[in-house]
Structure formats: structure tokens, C-alpha cells
Image (cartoon, rainbow, N blue to C red; front, side):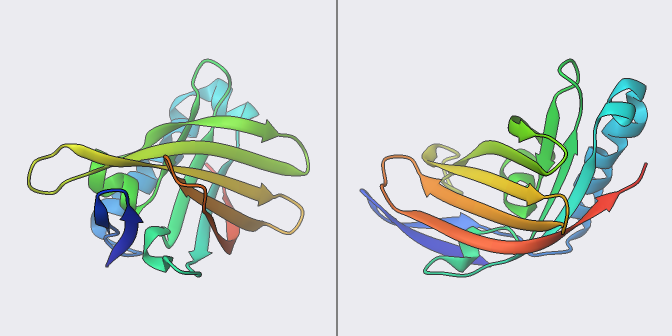
Length: 161
């Protein structure tokens, strides 16, 4: 799948390689193994896999699945989805906005690159909110320099190491 966003330079294509590609499964396994390979993070952190229901004007700009592993301050928090996997080849670091007994909120950005030149043409900012009581998710998307925000919802599962 590919999505088109309007940018100042015209239509922009965003790669979204699909929900259950082999590479994504490997990336999710890498995220989940962070908790196991770092004992402190496994004790303190949580891991989630969220199924997102793409919606709105640019549904293809939303990943259909997101994996999150929350570590402590030393290990950091990592996220992977089909879009991240396409542009970065595996999990990337995310910033924790809030992590308490009721919710987890993280942010990350993806530099969308021109497939032919490899030059970054736009940066997309994502924020994922997971409500821990009912394991629902809300994923916000905003492009750098654009005032519009897009929203998708979903459900999550806690992953056990």
C-alpha cells in the first residue's frame, strides 16, 4: 500500500508495506526481545502490539500494526511498524510522553524518503496513546509544516517476555 499526502511540493507517496510482512514480524521480535535481553527493562518495562484501524483522509499513512517496548531510562523505548521498517529496516527509538498505571503515550518521527534519490522529503510525527485498562489505542499523525492532524484508533495486546 502507498498513501498520498499533499505537501508544499505536491503529492507525496508514503510506503506502507502491509500488516504482516516477514520483515515486520522480525522487527516486532526484535522490539520484544529488548525486554528479555535487558533484565532491568523487562522488570520495569512493558511491551505492546497494537492493531490500528486506518481511517480518515489518508488511511494508508497509518501503520496497521505497531510494536512498542518500553525500557527504563538507560535502555530507552523502541517502536516498529511497517512504515518504520520500510524506511529504517527495524525498530527506532521513541520518546515516552507519559507512562503510568493508566496510560502509555509515546512519540516518534519518520523521515519519508524519495524512493529514487533517498533524500528525505517530509517528516511525519506520530503519537501513540495506549489506555492500559481496556488496551485501546489512539494514533495521531501530523506532517512537519502542516497544521492538519489525522487520527486512527485500535486495540492492543500486552506481550509477555
